[in-house]
Each structure stands twice: as structure tokens, then as C-alpha cells.
Image (cartoon, rainbow, N blue to C red):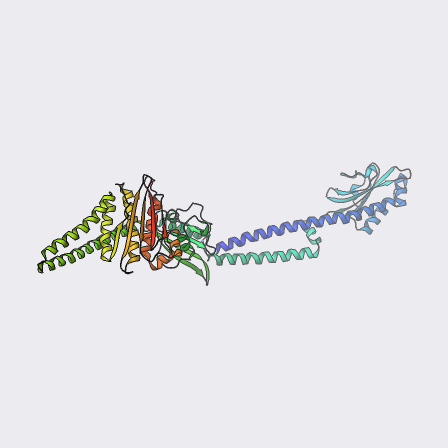
Length: 526
């Protein structure tokens, strides 16, 4: 059917079929119960009639004397009239009918069925569709002298309904009315809940929804009021690295970091929330779903911004390089102005001494870094960071026990990420804090791992924040107040964990101490 409301009509039709089927079963049960009651009651009555006839002296005398059998019809018809039985039959011991309401039966053989009356016992049962009571007539010598059969026809189906108790019929009527009313109510409710849509239309909507959810590149994940996953498309499952059977699982029971749980459950507010998961940088937006003022759940969309974050880091690295060159240019300009002033004053010896001093300081730092750090990318980064630190009056030094041989390209890139972010984090903490501030970098190498320790003389990090920074990957506070720095620390942690290493934060004396460990021979996880 394609007409609007046909689904409700189909449901109504099936409900009515079920209701009438149940009513038919109940009616059949009532008829059976009525017939059983009829057999029980009428059977006892017919047995009493037959026993009375069999015990009548006139009947016994007439059966004992074949010549005096003419009064038998009178006794039989009198008993039938008084009892209301359909028939009262008297037969000889050889089952030959002697008297019957139907003249055609006289002289015929009495049908006994399963009756054991010829053995001298009374019997009640059904013979040829008639309820019959058989009673033997015993003579003075204890011998069988005849049989008495009292019978009444069994009621038909509709007679059984008519003979049912009045309250049973009333209950059937009430059940019919309630069944019809319930079916109509159900059809109306289904129509309302499905907005009048037909099964074909509902199926089409489901197919379109599945095609839409699994065809878009963005991930979609829905949760209900109890924060249980109710829907997730393939893209979201891949981006979040969730198992195929995650539908129906509580968000807090998922094997994910706390930051991701906060966003999915709404504990982290705001748009474009950044989450790190399975080596990816994800941007998530959560939208609550409400209807009639009642919250039904929420839908969260997520996009993969890993490549964008990588490009952003490259751009940030370029910006840092530009700042470093600008700082160096500013430093060289100041030195040239100093040299020019000394020349104008004719202090040629001071010029020579100043140039030697500047060249010596630059060459010492350059020689110190290149002598201990053989990897060119990491060495160049430290030399550039020294100029950026010097511009803000912050000293950058390399620990005496530092040493790093040439390493493979991937480890070198990870070291640049870790060292650059940790030094930038320390510069942000020290910037504008005062004079005589310093940052110390220690890079140590062993056959199994490379450790990077960055300590500073700043105010340090509060213990509760220190716990959140690396336990959550990217905290709510970092997202709201210091997103770039928090993301840098999160990327540092991601680079370490991707290689099977770790990064920790501990209080220093003074300042804070970041320790990153990167295994050298570990298989890099994507």
C-alpha cells in the first residue's frame, strides 16, 4: 500500500485478526467447558433416570416374563416425560430393543459403544453423538434380565455458546470491545510516532542515513542521555581507533584518553576542541540534541587535522627561524653601531678588542654545540634558539655531559620537535620574568635511547597542572587559555609515545624540569 496511513491500517487489521483469533480460542474453550459441564450434569441425571426405571418392580416383572412385556412402553415414556430425556430405551438381555420413542428401533440391536452394562455395571458415555446412560436390570437370581438406556443429544457449537454462563458471555463482549479499542489506539499511536510514514519510506530514510553517515569524510558519533554510544560511522571509528562493537558501550568505558572522554561527554565546552588520538590531531565539535526541552543526547563531529597541524608546525618552525634571523640581525646591527661609534672616536684598539670578544663568544657557543651535537638539524636548532633567547635576555646553555652522534632522519625530526617545543615552552615561561634567567638543555645518547632534559630558572609549574598536561595529552585549560603551548607539549608527548618513549614533568630547584625519552631502535608507530 502507498496511501498515507496504510501502515496504521495494516497494523489495525493484524491486531483485529489477533484479537478475533484470541476471542475464538476463548469461545472454543468456553464451549468445551460448557460441554464438559453438560456431560457431567446431564450424565448424572440420565444415570438416575435409567436407574429408577431399572429399579421399578413393574419393569423387572415385565422383563422376567416375556408374556407380560406390554407395560414396558408406559414405564419408559413416563420416565422420559418426567426427566426431560430425549429417549428412554428398554432392551432385552440380548440387546434387542423392546421399547423406544422411535418405532423403527424396536426389534433392532441396541448400540452400546464402549459400555460395560452387559457385565452388570452402570455406564455413562457418548454413543453415536448422544450422551447415554446404560443401567443393567438384574433379576431375583442375580442374572441379567434387560438393559435400560436413557439418552440426550449433545449440544452443538452455537448451543454451547448459548449455554455458557452469562458472565462468560459478558467477558467475551468486554474483551472484544477492549481489543477493538486497543487496536485503534495502537494504530493511531504508530501513525503519530512514525509521522505517517510508510514502511517503504522508513526503509528509504534508513538507507539514506546509512549512506550519508558512511559516505562523508567527517566522523560522526552519537551518544544518548547515559553517555552510551548509539551511532558511529566508519570514519569516526577509524579516526578514534575504536573496536567494531563499540556501539552500546559507555564513553567512560572506552580505552581512550581523558581528554577525548571530556569532549564526548560534554565536560569540555567550546567549539573546535583539539584532541590527540592514535597519532592524529582531531578537531571535534559536540552538539546537544533536545526535543521539547528534554535532552536526548548529543552528536559529535570530528575532522582529521593531522596534516594541517604538521603544516602549522612547519610554519611555526619557519616563523621561529625568521624570528631567530631577525634577532641575529638586530644583534649584528647593535654590534655594527658599537663598532662604528668606536671608529668615529678613534678607539681602534677598542674596536679590535670588541670584535675579538664578540667573535670569541659566538665561536665558543658554536664550537660547544657542534663538538657535542653531531646531528646537524639538532645543532642548528640549538644555535638558532640561543640567539632567540639572547634577544630576551635569557641565557641558553648546554649541559656538560651532553652528546649526540648522527642519527637517522626520523629520529632527528622527532628530536627537533621535542627540543624545539620544550625550549619554546621554557622561553614562554621565562619571558618578562626578570634578569639572569637561564635555560639548560641536556641531550644524552645511549645505544637504546636518547634523553632530552630541559630545565629553566622560571617559576615552575603547579603540581595539578603538571599532572593534567601529560595525563590528558591536551587539557581543557590548555585549550581555553594557552592552546598553542598546550598543543606543543601534546605533540612532544605524541612524538615520544610514537617511538615507545615517554615525557615527564617534575619540579626543579628552581623552575621546572621536562624529561623526554626517545628509544633509538624502536619501531615507529603511526
